[in-house]
Amino acid sequence: MAAATLRPALPQAGPEQRASLLCAPKHRVAAGGRTRSPSFAARASLKSSGARASIPKQWYNLVADLPVKPPPQLHPQTHQPLVPSDLSPLFPDELIRQELTEERFVDIPEEVIDVYELWRPTPLIRAKRLEKLLGTPAKIYYKYEGTSPAGSHKANTAVPQAWYNAAAGVRSVVTETGAGQWGSALSFASSLFGLNCEVWQVRASFDQKPYRRLMMETWGATVHPSPSEATAAGRAILAADPSSPGSLGMAISEAVEVAATSADTKYCLGSVLNHVLLHQTVIGEECLEQLAALGEAPPDVVIGCTGGGSNFGGLAFPFIREKLAGRMSPEFRAVEPAACPTLTKGVYAYDFGDTAGLTPLMKMHTLGHGFVPDPIHAGGLRYHGMAPLISHVYELGFMEAIAIQQTECFQAALQFARTEGIIPAPEPTHAIAAAIREALECKKTGEEKIILMAMCGHGHFDLASYEMYLRGDMVDLSHPAEKLEASLAAVPKI
Image (cartoon, rainbow, N blue to C red; front, side, top):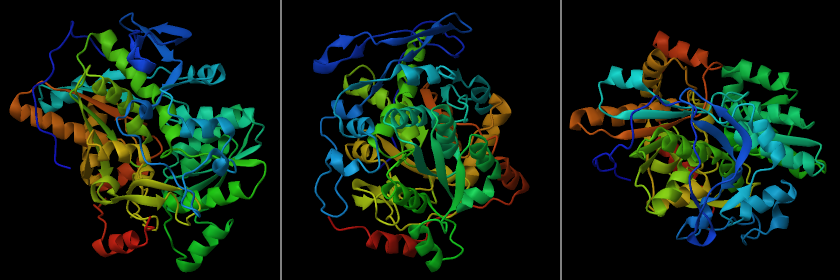
């Protein structure tokens, strides 16, 4: 998709203020096009400028407002649209309902809000020092999700998934993880609700990030490198390639296999599925309130990294709702690694969410379920597919996507860390690099755009990656054409 055309910034509203943890209630769209005031948790705190900051009491479902509904997920054997019973071996009933619902808002359980209060609302911060370094007339804001106990946005969905499983009487949950952010979040959430947790971590990240594994184990989880000898799927992969670096698709196969064959065990997923993106919309809902409390104009561009899509969707979906309603007109830009360019190089087709073909078939942008990305440092973005809902929004033309090499991303990360003080995880460095590109373009044109980006987590456990970059040992990796052609050839013909 072509890059967005530059346009004048929206007029500023109200006095300029420092952005911090701010929220103020405003009207939201309800069913039938009416407006209503949102419900909020009782907890509200006073931040630096005295504005109230509150936690939304409902998640937002973009499906309700799309002019064209997304294609259904299909049963992997019959190729018929899924019915709730098809998903019951993997998920508890309430998560299945959320996966398939077209309701606009879903209530957040009080027990989940109680845990959210450990770190939410998260800060919206203006990157004034980065703006000064770049010499740009643009304003750069970032929504920082690294304040959660696990250090990223992943806890926003880990907590409700763990709670719904515990409420359904489930004893154990299994999952996959790439960089370890999701595995850490689910381990944390499982420890709060008395669940056993077993995690398959992609081998490349398992070796690169040992302290993420220790973090998961500290919260009581059992962690396997994937592919492993513990499952039939893992053993088959190792038989074909004993030195396989693993992939999220492989790790999903192993976790799904265990869940599907164990009566007291369910599967949890950290991205891709509709209910996961639903839970993440607390990010965008808070951000809308924070910008309003600042008296700031709506953003001109919203930027986020994309692997499976939950971080980007969590920030962008509430803003897309506002754009569809005619209340603002931002552009939306997804940023993916050049070594795993799902949106920019993949095909839009039905494909499996895992390597072994155990999951439902989903209409998504895919590089082929057999695609094994090179072991880049942004392990959380090494996924062959994209969330079906993100893919659908992309096909509708509501967003654009770009791919950036990892050395540019780490250079941007150093600029960010040395001005804003936060060391970002490798995944959001892609959003930072894209935001810097946009800010420098504003420097050329003189446009005073408002740039909003998702800063989905800190990089305290990723310092080995920074060491490689600082030593000059990091190299850019691409996707060989023949490798991509081979994996795309295996995409099911539906």
